[in-house]
Amino acid sequence: MSILRSALCAMGRHSGRWSYPGRRCEAERVCEECGRREEQTRHTWGQFASIAPGKCEQSRRCARCAATESRTVHDWGPWFYYEDEITTPQVHTCRRCHESERTAYTVR
Image (tube, rainbow, N blue to C red; front, side):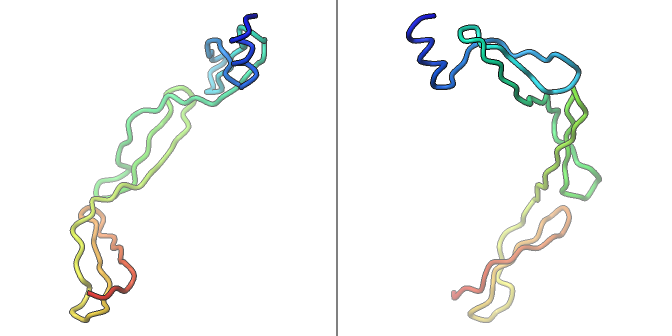
């Protein structure tokens, strides 16, 4: 084992190829230099897709283990002042699902 490679192993920078021993997404590798075994979860995610029309929730599925992950992506419109008063908050609305979001009260 070279001095450089042993220094890299001491810093946690191990070498070796990741492999998937089963059908799940738990990958493992054995360091070629020091023999240390590492495990890691590595999913093969597909593209995000809308759950239902007119909704902002999206999900995707792992091609290997069928695990799912979801997120919310809004299509926000422009900010507007909620009322004509001086200390009114600003509000914007999602063009797709019509959810609103406001700022704290501000002074114009």
